[in-house]
Length: 343
Ligand SMILES: Cc1cc2nc3c(=O)[nH]c(=O)nc-3n(C[C@H](O)[C@H](O)[C@H](O)COP(=O)(O)O)c2cc1C
Image (cartoon, rainbow, N blue to C red):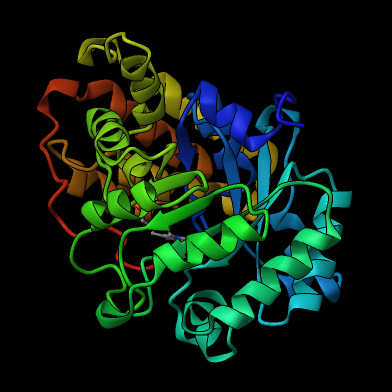
């Protein structure tokens, strides 16, 4: 199975830079876009096991992918092992290469039901969930966690130990506790400690802003891979550059970054895979993020968010990215950016 190029671990060996799941962002279009720009493994946003059980079309649309995205994981969340296992079976039937289970979501609505990061407080329930899902599907199962519930109960090492015993393929660790939400910084020292004591492959995650940081964190933590989320929303070349640096090459020179061309490509993916009424919204969202740090960005954002016509949004976007000098981007990595999410 490991020989299959669609096995997530095989893909990780060739390219350890994985796209982090992000609700409302890592949809079909964005996954194809990032894959074309050298993301390794990709994962859907979190999908409700109950939504799958009720055969919700909206839920199924979150699971849509195409052959360019392999290996693709479908991320599930839920509180009941049987229901999550039944959902995993459906994901397997739909051609997912692996199942990723979400134990990192800090959102109160999810946690109150006993799903997401709530399972970090009940390791017996977590263990039961893992064994039930692993027994039900033939494809690999991975998990994504936080370092623990809060600072006084960090237990990622114990979770990794349970995961290893249950036959889980890897553990991705977002280096914050549930209590931290998105505040503070991801604790990469802690991730490295857990990696050093664990037998299971580990992906480190949190606050990687540049390709160099991705490679440095990979090396210094000893992790088997790193997951990048928000970093690719300001810099679409982060996976491409990280892979090149890791392979011993150089990142793209600033003047060689085809930003305008890449944004046109993103638009093509949005047209292909988003519902028509969402294309403009998504284009505005991504264009606004990619404009971060460039002179004139706030005026540009104001203009596109006032625009109703998709063709005008596209025209304004392309002319903004045509006119900027890529050298003029300021480093905004220390500013708050998307301080909420499901993991
Ligand atoms: C808008 C947003 C949505 C997210 N949705 C998910 C999700 O559906 N599942 C998940 O496991 N993590 C989710 N996350 C967490 C990310 O995968 C990642 O763990 C977190 O953003 C830290 O990594 P980063 O600093 O590279 O972004 C989300 C994060 C953000 C910002």
